[in-house]
Image 1 (cartoon, rainbow, N blue to C red):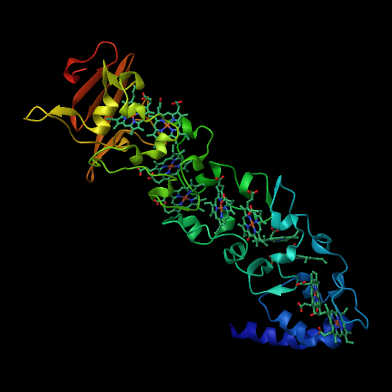
Image 2 (cartoon, rainbow, N blue to C red):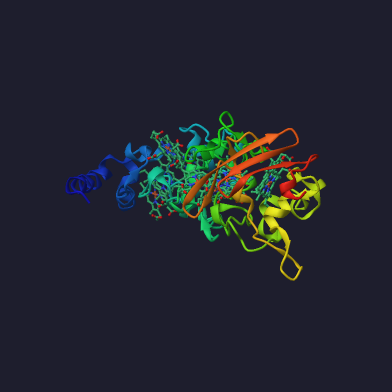
Length: 333
Ligand code: HEC
Ligand code: HEC
Ligand code: HEC
Ligand code: HEC
Ligand code: HEC
Ligand code: HEC
Ligand code: HEC
Ligand code: HEC
Ligand code: HEC
Ligand code: HEC
């Protein structure tokens, strides 16, 4: 401790009994000394006004408070439970579950620092394999108001504003946004605390360029809201088709080609992320990414929708058209 601060503390401890709520200090000198030795001292104590909260106990030497529960604190403080959603720990009425009425070594007179305080009553939300850095650094209160809020889950801001405090959120003005995002609910796909999947996703989403095959278990995140038949089904199951050929099937499962014995074999399978960006894009349609990465190189990908299909000009192959009614012969549809 800083020497001057130390001296001041000692002095305070020595003079405090004389100043403290007269009659209390007479017999509770030791306890008052302890209270004053902490870093953060409640202002009512600072003023030695024990009687703001205590009545004298007379001969029956026990705790007597002038008010019970939060009413004691609300004599001087605004009710922190004014939001639409009130923390049940606050509804219970005991501010002192979290605050020490006299003094504390923790900021805001807390009985324990955040997040340990929260973990006294809640399961540790950082037990997943992938932990949000905003949570692992322990600041639950960056996102949650400990008392009450107008947002669900006591959030300090609604979504996506909460997330955009620290992240670039796809801007609907500048890009086409995934409809999944139109309600701003990032938590449709991400867990705010921790998960088993990379990028805090709530379910698996394979992003390896060439994942070596296809199964529905590779993209359950997308198949929560989209039919997997867009890949596994026939041409009627997707708009990404050339005549009767399902081009999702061709790209995601791999093109079906006969080998030299005439047996049909699948070619390279590709992941959704090779073409789609999950949040939004400046391409005119269908969440097609602007770039496709090849190792560390980024190739531009230009997608142009047409009335009945589209054109893709990309580094991986010659410009390709697809047309649902007048199939491009090169695609063999
Ligand atoms: C004549 C001495 C005396 C005075 C004056 C006195 N107390 Fe006490 N008080 C005691 C004793 C003795 C006890 C029981 C032992 C203990 O818990 O410290 C006690 C107990 C208490 C307790 C309960 C402690 C517990 O652990 O539950 C509180 C609270 C308390 N006093 C507050 C006060 C306050 C506030 C004042 C001033 C308004 C005050 N006392 C004045 C002697 C006194
Ligand atoms: C802001 C309100 C408030 C003020 C001011 C206050 N107390 Fe308390 N005090 C409480 C509450 C609430 C409890 C009960 C804590 C609990 O139940 O854990 C308490 C408990 C106590 C206890 C028994 C438990 C303990 O912490 O030792 C003592 C002794 C005590 N107070 C002494 C004092 C003295 C002496 C003063 C003046 C220097 C004082 N208090 C000022 C609210 C206050
Ligand atoms: C007699 C008036 C009074 C009572 C009763 C009172 N407080 Fe305070 N409290 C104050 C004042 C004055 C301050 C300092 C100004 C401020 O931060 O509002 C303060 C500050 C605080 C702080 C902020 C401390 C900091 O360093 O950030 C907390 C937390 C707090 N009080 C909690 C409580 C709780 C919990 C109770 C009930 C056990 C309570 N207060 C009862 C007057 C009171
Ligand atoms: C679940 C734990 C919890 C409960 C219960 C609780 N608080 Fe708090 N309170 C906190 C935390 C955590 C902070 C610090 C907030 C921060 O640092 O952003 C705080 C801060 C405060 C502050 C100082 C900063 C501010 O928001 O003005 C006051 C005053 C306060 N609380 C009063 C109360 C009162 C009065 C009650 C009871 C009605 C209460 N608290 C109940 C956890 C709690
Ligand atoms: C004294 C116990 C206690 C402490 C300490 C506590 N909580 Fe709670 N909290 C509860 C209870 C009880 C509920 C309601 C039941 C539930 O959802 O688990 C709750 C609910 C919540 C909710 C859900 C609210 C909703 O309406 O969906 C959030 C978020 C929350 N607490 C965050 C926190 C944070 C952050 C902290 C630390 C600053 C904290 N809690 C400290 C007891 C506590
Ligand atoms: C990056 C912001 C953020 C941080 C930091 C954060 N949370 Fe949350 N928390 C959320 C969001 C968003 C929800 C609502 C989830 C939903 O609606 O599906 C939530 C929900 C909760 C709930 C309600 C029950 C549940 O799990 O859905 C509790 C309890 C909770 N958080 C506790 C904590 C605790 C304890 C900490 C600190 C260890 C913490 N949170 C840190 C954003 C955060
Ligand atoms: C207080 C700041 C803060 C807030 C608020 C916040 N984050 Fe984060 N988030 C971070 C930091 C720091 C990282 C780690 C560095 C990075 O990847 O940018 C991170 C990383 C992430 C990651 C990447 C994780 C990985 O494994 O690569 C995702 C996804 C994420 N946050 C989503 C969200 C969502 C959704 C919300 C709103 C519920 C949110 N964040 C709110 C600070 C924040
Ligand atoms: C439809 C599902 C979905 C929704 C809704 C969603 N995300 Fe994502 N997000 C993803 C996927 C999938 C990835 C991983 C992309 C990858 O690794 O190629 C991701 C990655 C991220 C990352 C990591 C950085 C990066 O670009 O790789 C951040 C940060 C992030 N999202 C924030 C948000 C925020 C903030 C929101 C709400 C505005 C949100 N997400 C809504 C699916 C979604
Ligand atoms: C929470 C639900 C939800 C999730 C999860 C989801 N989507 Fe969507 N997505 C939608 C909705 C709603 C639409 C609007 C069209 C519709 O109803 O099919 C849409 C549309 C699309 C479109 C067409 C965009 C356009 O402009 O027409 C693509 C491409 C797409 N999603 C890809 C994905 C991918 C890839 C994933 C997995 C990373 C995914 N979606 C996960 C709800 C979701
Ligand atoms: C080779 C690039 C490519 C890959 C890989 C790809 N898509 Fe698409 N996807 C497209 C194109 C192009 C469209 C636009 C079709 C149209 O409307 O003309 C589309 C459209 C969609 C749509 C809108 C409905 C539909 O079927 O027309 C959804 C949803 C979708 N894709 C999801 C996915 C999912 C999920 C994956 C991975 C399992 C995936 N896509 C893989 C290029 C691709």
